[in-house]
Image 1: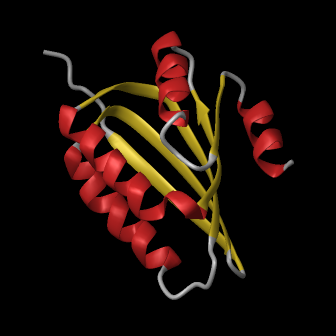
Image 2: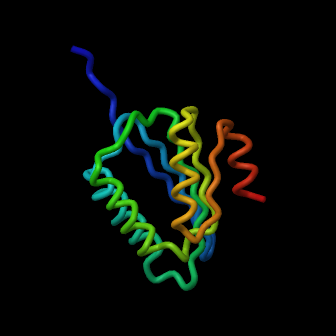
Length: 126
């Protein structure tokens, strides 16, 4: 039996009302992950007037997600939709590119898929 790796790493940098979130997902994204992520995001932007968020999401080691994650992601998007300015998705699988395209229809932020982390970071900072 092969053990599967699972982890989610969140880094939040803040300067005044501007935030940079870096998220790395390893293995399968779960509802339990969102139960940890959402309160951290909520706490970070709480009491900040007009926060803007740029997010770098590294999905190069993402293997899939639970169905409930779709609902969690939708709720997060609705709650903080106007706060996100840009979201860069880093991946190396075509289904992530397609999923990013579909997700971009439903959110306010500019969302773009990348296969190179330097290009993603350059785009986020431009």
